[in-house]
Length: 274
Image (cartoon, rainbow, N blue to C red; front, side):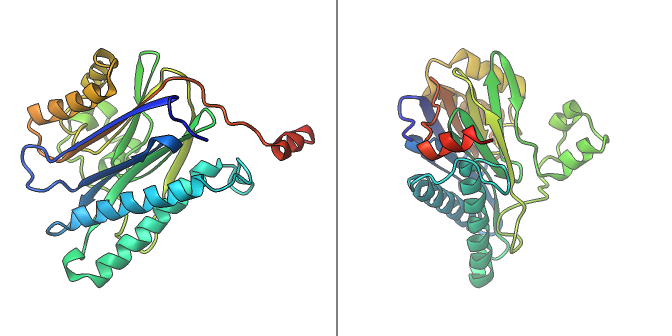
């Protein structure tokens, strides 16, 4: 299913104002509605290695799988769309390769990366993430975070020690509890959301929300939405103008029109007997 012309995409990654190296990595395939963003960490330049591996593996595997013939839209065991399984399995594979690289290469010891990836299909979006790189959605004027950080701070919010507002002002936001490459296996969180025309989806590394309040992110998208390229650059500029203490990467998608998948004859017949 080619999504060209149905969804508009833009992306920017920037080193920021303080760091010497950009350890973020981004990758996309607009034809299959794929966006992948990773924020690396650990060792001299090793964060770049980890995030680069994550984006490369997930992009390659997701693209390859998406172009295979569809055998079923829904996985019978998990109830997830095939695209969600594709993303989840690609992230699993990336974790394995990053972990093995960290174990075998001295200069990569201790490296890891967060990741957030999304894939659009059949008027839905599958979002997979590990760590504190985020996905947001703007719909009908309502802006909301659709992923929950895998972080110590988020756990404290969940347990009632902090409110969401207090958490946003906290200086201890970057202790992640889950990342790729740290352990041989990792739990990948995957969710699916219905998609409507005029929805905006934003993927970002923590360099954006650490510097820019959600209300200002919302305002920027709403103000400059005539051009996603401008939206992306404006968000990066905002983070840098607030100090740019970290690398910052943003990927933005705007749904232009419906992209319902054509059902094959087998699927149609199967529905008759449900």
